[in-house]
Image (cartoon, rainbow, N blue to C red; front, side, top):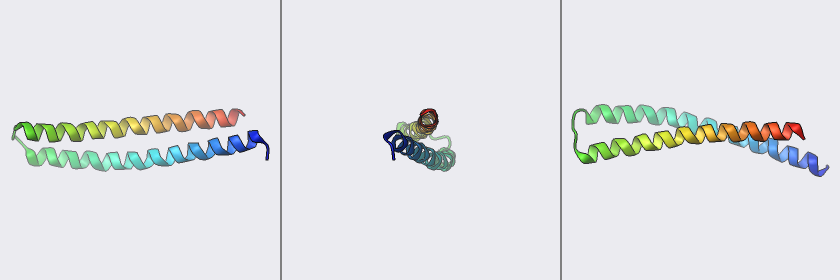
Length: 86
């Protein structure tokens, strides 16, 4: 197998892994968002600093998961495009 073929195969495998990881993180993010909504609902009208910090921390984690999905999707697409151009 030529070096180009090996590279193309490796890049394609990497793109698939990134797609799979993105899907997993996306499913987690969906479930996590539901849990956050429940926590916010249960905390309700309380407005202690600790309550606000918990909600803010959970929201930041949700946002980071969403950014990770976008980054993985972009990496998969660009890697696959590059491999297909070889």
